[in-house]
Image (tube, rainbow, N blue to C red; front, side):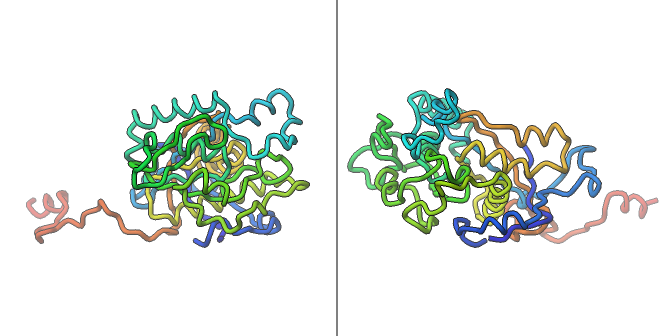
Length: 318
C-alpha cells in the first residue's frame, strides 16, 4: 500500500489490498504530511473550490458502547482482562444503535450511502449492521442475513441484507493492535456464521495474526495506518461511504489532517468521538490521485454556436 508523503487527499467537513501487513519500520520511516502547510497556501482566508468528481463523502462512525468501555471506565486495567476478548455491545450500546439508525433514515443517508466499511471486530460489525442494515430478517427470503439472531449475545433479532448497501470488512481500520484482549478479533470463519452477508474477502488470514499479546501498536503507527486507509478509500468507485470503526483509530487518523485549515476546523476534525457518534466529512483529491471523469459536468456548445464572452461582445458593438 502506497503511503503518500505530499498532496494526500484532504479532509473537510460538509491501490493494493489494504489489509496487507505493513512493517512498523515503514510506518515510522514515512514522513507523512496530509495537507500543505499554511505557508504554502493560505486556505484559512475563505472557502475553497474543488471539482465535485474529485471529492468523496465519508460518514465516520465510532462503534456503540461495548462491555470494555463500561469496565475500562471503572478501572483502566480492566482493558487487560481476557474476559473482554472481542468485546460485544452492551444493552445501552444497542439503544445507541437504534437511535443512530433512526437519524440515518430521517436524514436520508440510508438512501445515499453506497458502501459500508467496517472494522472486523464484533462491536463494530454489530454497530454497522444495526445502523445501516435492512429491516428484520424473515426466514425463507432469498438473501443471506447481515446478522443472525442473538449474534454476540446481543438478544437481537436477525437483520436483513435487503434494501441496504453492501458491507465490507477491512482490517486496516481496526483499533490499536496488541495487548488489550478487547481489540483482538475472532476468526473470520466464526464471523461468517454470525454475519453471513458481510464480505470478508479482503481479510487474508482466518485467525488474527496482527494482534500481539506483548506489543501495543504505537500511536504514530495507528495514524500512518489510518492515512493508508483513507488513500485506499479514494481508490474505491463509491462516492459516499460509511465507515464504522474505533475511537483511537479515528483520533490518530484524523489528527493527520486539517493543517491547511483554520485551527478551529482542525480541532473539529480530530476531536474524540463519542460512542455511536456519526460525523460526515468530505475527502478532496488535490493531487490528481484519482482519474474518474465527472458524471455531472456538461461540455456546452451543443449544438455549436457563438461562444464570445459578454464583455467581449460588448467591446465589438462599441
